[in-house]
Length: 303
Image (cartoon, rainbow, N blue to C red; front, side, top):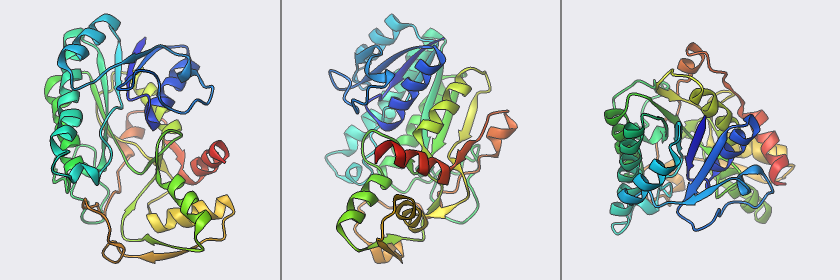
């Protein structure tokens, strides 16, 4: 199988390319930068074929994908700066990337009759209550621009294609770019005490583990909506921070606060990011390892 992967300069795209190389698949990576812009860690992604692509450019998407003729497109590219997406001068751009860009890719996938894997988010829901969200739940009520435009991307895929996987994830961490773990390690090294919210509940997702699952999916025709995070139970950001510092050997004290007490955030955040992953097992896919184990492995990668 030949794969085309968007957003390889990001956390997930980087790991998907490496997983493809590990399994002997042909993988072509793309992003908006002229050259691969992720971490130069010597891994396969830095040596695999790369194509510059602006997914908002209809003609460019059609030209590139038609030339590559992939069997599977793994669409990781997205606008993910949640707070910045709320800026009036950014909303149009965020929608052009998350919704329009996804539609552009889906249209060509339909023409080529190839599979598409779209990476989405728990932010498509309103984040209320305590029950884990079912992957086939259609009670969408996004709280912010990011969530709304990612939902529009989901609908673009589902309304255009039959051979698709829509995979919702949450609390992502990987080598490229920013994430909660890197932020905690940076501020934890500077301050003795930190305030972290304890009323937003979910489960982290390690892109290295997720990439394995996505390629597993691509090898099947078990299409549909799925939720995928690491196992290990539901936690708060406060719980996550405490475990990060424990495993990293930091003496930083973490003080639990409510979202309201913490303030600062421009975009509304979901309180309930619990995702029901039971559909994965029912479909015969191997669940991801625990987030605690993923954190241990990740810290060895970055420290």
